[in-house]
Length: 79
Image (cartoon, rainbow, N blue to C red; front, side, top):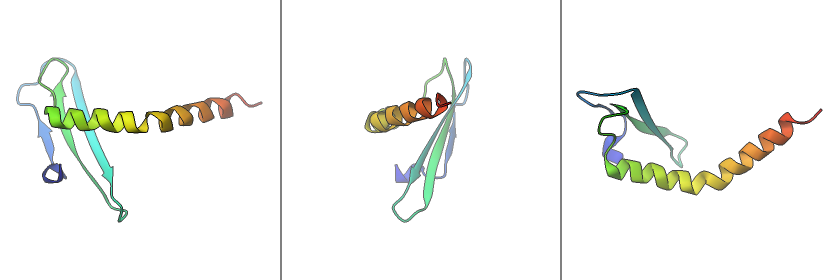
């Protein structure tokens, strides 16, 4: 993944609705970096190793996101 940092990859002939996958990392030293894939909804998307990473990251953060949503709902419903 390191070799992808700072790059944007664009599908040559995107078909369908425009899609953008923007992957960002926050590093231990406080810096950040990432990469972008631009493609169409009916086109080949990012490589499987990228989509596998994104799916794994979502699984790892699901519980945090659910807690965040619950807290936001509770805060929004206060008088």
